[in-house]
Each structure stands twice: as structure tokens, then as C-alpha cells.
Image (cartoon, rainbow, N blue to C red; front, side, top):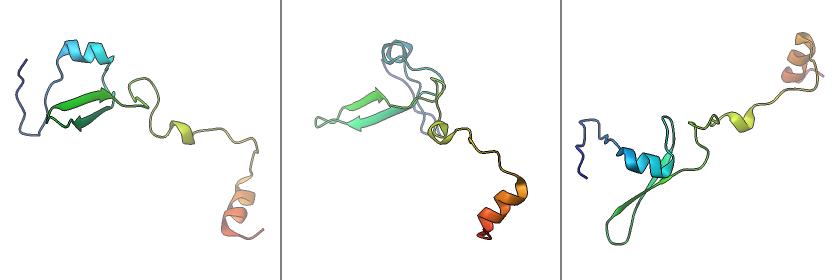
Length: 79
């Protein structure tokens, strides 16, 4: 199946390939060039389309309730 490269260097991944790789909008993919020159596409880990994003691992909730003046003093090295 042939597709056309846009002026921005983009192509549409055919639906049967998106379905086979379970790709949805926002999914990440990896490309590689095989030893025979063929391009290999595979689903990348940590999919944005699955609800996770690149900041997900950094998110959390603090167990300590800081008062603003105490936190500012700590950040300034005044404690």
C-alpha cells in the first residue's frame, strides 16, 4: 500500500497497521531501518494515548502541608 509524503515529512499509517499495533491518537512509535533497508515501525513504551504522559512519573502528592513562609525559608536556605 503506497502513501504520499506531505511537505512536512508526514505520512498516514494505514488503518490495518494502526489496528495491528493498537495505535491511537497520541501513541508513540519507534522507527528503525533494518539491515536490508526496510523501515520497521513498532509501538513505543509509555504511550501518551493510554493516559500516561512524560510527566506522570513525576506527579505525586506531598504528605507534608507546608506553610508558604516555611517553604520559602527552606527553599532560600534560611532554616
